[in-house]
Image: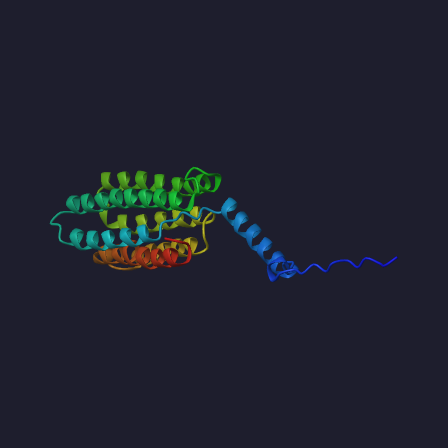
Length: 207
């Protein structure tokens, strides 16, 4: 009785098994990205930071033109409110595009890191205004904002704390310079630093 030979089955190139090393690399990449999203707040505004820098430079110029220190303070307080609104809106938009909830655990940690130094800044501003110490305000603002950025940046991408330390350095330098340099350093810190780091964040971390 003749033996029946098995019919050979041809496999196409698409049926070939995926390389084990390629699959391992893909899995590791997925795990790393998932862990980063779950432990870091990545919705830090990049383009929003650039816009905040532009408005700060404009505020520095306008504040320098004011005839009284009270008007000078109004300009910078207006800029602070505008920058806060820009940052909040930019974070909301970025988190929406990325599909990352704005009220996630990393986002809450980021916000809590910001909250205490900013609250201290508000209280100190009121106290300095009450005792007519306007000249100290720029240094205090840069120092406390830098501390807020460093604290919040501990739960964000790496470049954020670096920016915070540069703000702290600018505040320290302000104490060593004459009073007239306040607007200049405010423009350099809140203006140029926000623009530079905003551009870096937008390029590396998606807008």
